[in-house]
Amino acid sequence: MDGPLDYPRRPLGRLAVAHGDILKMTFPIMKSEMAQRVKPASISRLMRIALENPGVVSLAAGFVDQASLPAELVGRAVEELLSDPIDGPRALQYGTTIGDARLRERLVGLMERGDGRRGGDYACAISRTVVTTGSAQLIYLVCEALLDPGDIVLVESPTYFVFLGPVESRGARAIGVPIDGGGLRPDALEETLAALERSGELERVKMIYTIPEHANPTGITLAPERRPALLEIARKWSRTGRILILEDAAYRGLSFGCAEAPTIYSHDAGGDWVIHARTFSKTLSPGLKLGYGVVPRDLVEPILGLKANHDFGTSNFTQLLINRILAGGGYDQHVDDLRTIYARKRDRFLAALDEFVGPLDPEIQWTIPEGGLFVWMTLPAGLDAGFDGPLFGRCVQEGVIYVPGEFAFADEPGPRPRNHLRLTFGLPGETDLVEGARRLGLALCGCLDPVA
Ligand SMILES: Cc1ncc(COP(=O)(O)O)c(C=O)c1O
Image 1 (cartoon, rainbow, N blue to C red):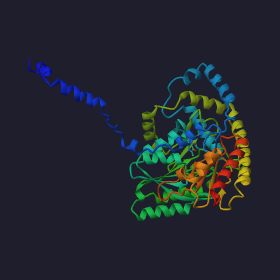
Image 2: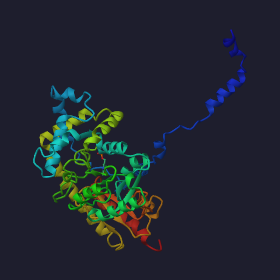
Image 3: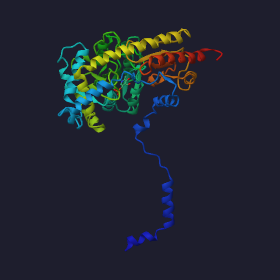
Image 4: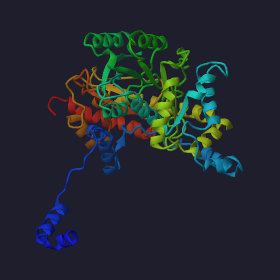
């Protein structure tokens, strides 16, 4: 009877105290290294300010135009889809991890059309097309599949700040490469690669990330002749493994009145070097959250394996719905309408910036986007546009917010400039855009005035 009798003989009081202490103690959660690397999202501060100040004009939120969201078009397609005896139940069932076969075929057809190719030219891309939950998921999966701690991604400087999150959480390094009015500079890219070769780090470079059309955050488009040039550079500097190009074409289709240059993907005949990422968030609805990517053949399986860990597959309902919308012809008309709407909003916004900000200081400059949703403003070098700088606080007082440009720069080569603003004409209506520019002008005026 040794064992059981031992229990009551234990100093019960001490046991109880120890147990109580344990209950009172707060042990730290043992977060993964990846979770520890995640930085708090800068954007949540902006959202809080917008929510706490209902009158504020947000030139910050990367949302799309609210009034043009196609509720009717989507509503009709939902009805048709659910009343279809075959597709209705299919839409409500699980699908495959790679995505619906008919949709993938249609997406590749869209790419062919966009690149001015004949139907069937990109046929071999169909089996390499993965449908994802927004292009954000595709981008995340690419980072998961390619990046280990210490690996390097070359990014435009400035770049889409959300992309820096998955890179940094993998423990990888993002290094900024200068851009100009024609986008990523091939000469600067080569210089960066040469410097990495000299420091013995070239083999850590896994990918080059670019947003060729109306980039977030600058609104700048990659010049047509630079597209094949980037591909050549990636090939030339690949030594022990491929340096891939991640072509994030989120704003393709939203060009105002100008023809779009063929994608970088169109120059990659075998599809071995370019990961082409797309989304319907900007041209249809971010609420539907459907994206896709065409990836090199040997990346398909790793991406699908990782995607299965996430969700087994993207919402089948959304996929079949978008396939129906694309088939019905309403999509093309909708994108046409969007181009007109955004071009008008861009014009109103730029005219208001000319009126309210232009006269303040000739050193204040901004980009003139030919599509997309963003304007990038540069202030005199000493003027800090960060959250804790003088301008942001004044802007909140005046009732306007923007994204501080510093978030869009990679840590390297550093230091991150603080005299830029990302402004968007996507969400606010035309009246608010004009008012937002006026308030921004007032806030800037207060910061530029030496006696203020
Ligand atoms: C450049 C860029 N890439 C990707 C995305 C992600 O879009 P989504 O995940 O909604 O497809 C965005 C969204 O703002 C973006 O601006």
